[in-house]
Length: 492
Image (tube, rainbow, N blue to C red):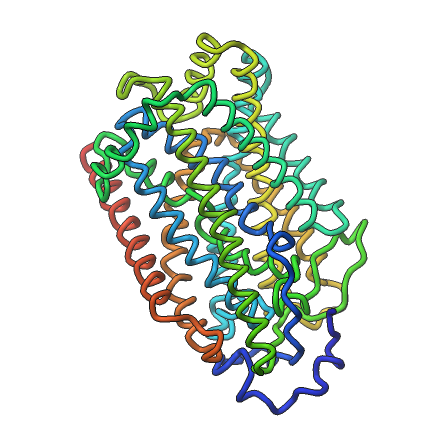
């Protein structure tokens, strides 16, 4: 049950010493309200946030980047997918920890530490994801399916407008996004089963363990650094996308997120009362038991729906590339022409229906990835504006701000496409490099944020180590990419 401000202020005031927020700084935002921690729900009802995030990765790293790398160097780079997904699993669950305990997003928590993070996270979210690389890729795939007919630019523009309408007219936005991404993942898993049974065979599976061990920790030569970064960062979610675990679990009603209002359409939905700032619970034997179940289920949901499905799809699409193309035989670029070549080989060896299925899966995966990206960016920006700048405004509710942000993202995408920037891989690489820096910043902030929670719910030392490794990993990748790019410019 969601509480309004007057209800939340009653009954539990004065118990800050035993609150789940612990020693959390309040900053310039209102103090956290008080409410009971809801009883945990079953794991099946919690499924969703991990699926949405991994669905974004399936639109880039899983479908394009890792298969292309496999075609050039074999299966030796799959270690990076496992590392990238593993680090993001810890990131996602630590983002979830803060929201489960306080009912507010991690970005709001960062803003409590320093108000300057509010505008910076707007910039760090919008700039990397303003580039409509996923939709441009989906439009290109449509032309492949149509035998080369159609304008990539206009198909992409039309797709962006459709995304805007879907997100604007959905009565409860999260439910629509979740259903769409669930359908996408199910379709991809069906395709994966088909190619496992009829295409891949046993040889690629036999070569996988030794190749992965052989390449562990090594960056393949002969592949642009920006491309490798794209594969690592967009394996799973990447960048500010991971932070929206907070937003999704609030709309899903996990933990103290159940006391936050959901984002609805200002046109077709009914806005819910409540505040975007947080709500903490009193630590009692009963609430501690509830917390342990919420936390266990949150980790399980992210492990299976994010890590396992993400790694499975990367491996399957990489094994498909390994099966279809002898290593090093493909001399083209790592763009959608690679997908077209694979599709032609599938058609020649296994028939036109499977070829069409492969292309349609790619089209759907990329378009729905762009839908999730627009939704995610709009959620982060709306949350920041609603909490830090328009908290007491009567007209600009979070739902209205969200809808405005959606159409602003659509407009930016249309402008970028209109000036002729339609090369998908270039757009995705730009986003990946920018997101490396973003991840370094918020991994460090998550450690600071979650160490301040009550001792019953705060981050543990092994998890601090995991986030610390994430900081070092993404910082190293960012430095490697920058140095490599500079060297390339100098040599040119």
